[in-house]
Image (cartoon, rainbow, N blue to C red; front, side, top):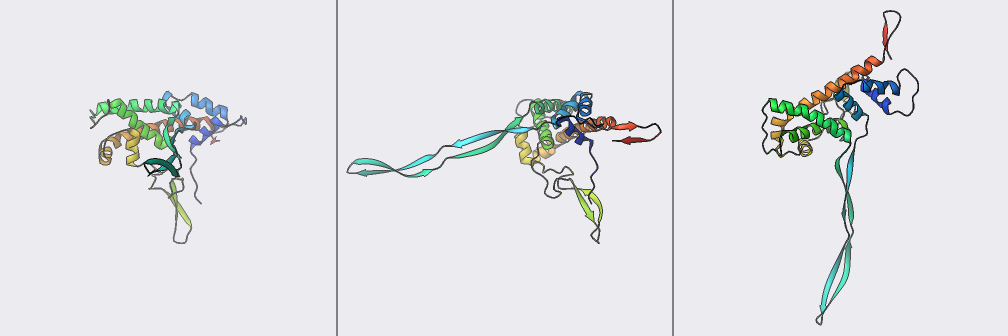
Length: 246
């Protein structure tokens, strides 16, 4: 049997729960702990409990009528012979979340500082470094907040169960296809499109990927701060030396 270690980030779901049960682990406690977080971690927690959606753009192609023109005795006449039906194509637009762009801007500031520190000079830059930093930050946030698709190898768990020769479970290992996230990651072409860069795939991997990893590490620090805060909130002391976690 595959047993998953509980992640305290799951308690954030209580922040959007309907009503308050009055239990030790309740909506009011989670909201109170979120308010005590540092600015960046608090903004990230608020974004995690928000349903982030995309703008839907409808591209409408009108119907087209096909006519045939005939000329008889110098007199032309038109006759409709066929119709091409119209169609509506739905495309995905930009993210519809103000909190998403607030967090992106905060993350972009940290990435921009690192770029300036390293004297980073990109090729084919559109504008200054701040625009590039915002693009890389958006790649990081989209990979964590919006789910492209579930990983088919691990069925979204992020881990695979191991079996011995007799067919009995003997442990688990992280899924290498999704790197333990349970999500299908964006391709290099999609990342370049999201960041609005004019570089090749190899150019992105060589020069921009390290700043994407920097953004991932910063977000991981925010999540660890949220976990620590929620973990302390549900840690209770007894009369003796024993302690328990709800």
